Image 1: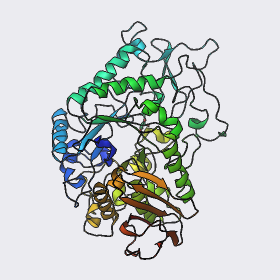
Image 2: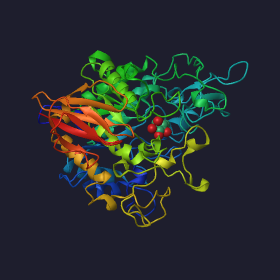
Image 3: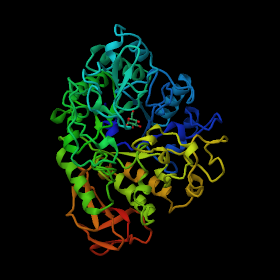
Image 4: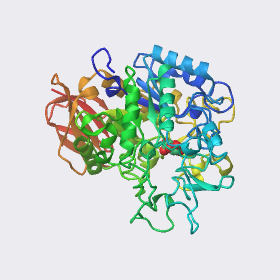
Length: 545
Ligand code: GLC
C-alpha cells in the first residue's frame, strides 16, 4: 500500500477523470479509444512541468457494452468494448501509463449489468434458471401496480414487467440495466472475481459506480415521500431514497470489497456515494477504516441531489463544506473532492450566469488542488471547457435526457486544437465540439492560461509537503473570502485563499509570506504588508514564513 516514502500513493495523488469516448480518437471513427489515450499520455504526465502533472487516471467504463448508458451497462466485465480497442490495447495502456508513473483506475459497475449480460439473459429465461436469483425479481402485487414505489434514477418506475416469466425485475436506472442481487453470495463472489481479474492484470484500482445502492432493504420496503418535492418536478426527487441508497446493510458488502483489495499491494478504490461527510463516513468503514480507501464528496457540485440546484460559489458555503468534511470524517479518513464529472454540468457553466465563470474556474483550480484530500480533475476542466448546450436534438445521445438530466453537454470531445476536428478526430465526432477558441494548443505556451495555471498548481503541490499531505486549519468565515492554512509536520505552511466576491477583498495575513501561485498576475508577489489583497474572483497560494 505504500510508496517509497512510506505513504499510500493515493493520499497525495492528483487524479484525472477521463471519459474514453471523448479524449482522443486514434482509429478515425469519431469515438475516442485506448490507443488515443496512449498517444496523449505525455500530455498528462511526461515527468516534467510542461505536462499536466497528474498521478492517476480514472477511465469511465471501457467494458463491452450495448452503450445504452455509454458503458454503465456492462455485458462483459472481463473485456474491452471494440469501440475502445481490445485487451492488447488495454495492456499496452497499463504498461505505457506505468512507465510514466501514471496509475490507472477502471470503473467498476456493481449495482447492475446490461440486460445483454449472459447472467441476465439466463436469469430472464425461466423462473428456474441458474441465474434467476442473481437479479431482483418480484411478483406483481395482488391488487396490480408495481412491487414497490421505487423510481428509476432516470425517471419512471424502477420495475419492468417481463411477460415471459410473469414477474417484474428491478432496475434503478434504465430498464436495460437490471440490478444485481448482492444478497446472493454467488453474485458477490462472481463480482469479487471481476475485481481480481483486473487487479491481476495490473490495474491500480477502481472507481465504484453507485456503491451505496448495491444492497437494498431486505423486503424492498417503499421509500418515504420527499417533503420538498412538488408535482411537475423530476420523479427522481419524489421520494427519499431511504431503502435503496445508503441502506445500512450495504456497509458489510463494502467491507467485503475492501478485503479483495487488501490481498494486493498498492491498490485502492474510490466510491461514488451521495451524502454529507457524516453520511459517507461509513463507506470508509467508520473509525476502523476497514471500508473503501476513498469516497467522493460531491458537495461542491450539489449539497443534496434530492433537493435540486447547484452549490453556489460563495465563501460562507465553501467554508461550511470544508468544515463539515474536516469534522465528520473519521480520523485518518481522507476527503476526496470532485468539482465536476460526466454526470453534471461543467464547473464553469454552473457558475457563469454573470459571465464570470472562467474566473471562478481559475480560483476553483487552486481550491480543488489546495484542499486537504484527493482531488479529481474532470478532463477538459484544465483548459476551461464549457458545456455545449447547443447540441441539436438529432445528435443528442444521453438516454437520461428524456427524464431527469441531460449529460451530453459536459461529455463533448476534448479540444486539442482549433482545427475542425479539434485534434480529437478526423471523423465527425460522436458529440459536437464546443467553441474552437478553447483548446490545449491555444493555451500551451501562454503562461496566463488556465492550462498553465493547472500545470503550475499540480507541480507546486507535488513539491510542497504542506499541500500534499499537510493538515488543514480554516481561518474565520467571512462573506468575501474563504481561507485555510495547510501545515506539514516539518513546520512548512501554505495559505490557500479564495475571494468569491466581485470586489477586491483584503485578508489579514496570519504570518508574513510569499505568493507561490495566484490566478491573477496583478496579485502582489512581495506581500510586505500584513494584508493579502485579492482581486475579484481570484485565489492564491501563499507560502508562510
Ligand atoms: C453513475 C454514473 C452514471 C450512470 C449511473 C448508472 O451515477 O456516474 O453515469 O449513468 O451511475 O450506472
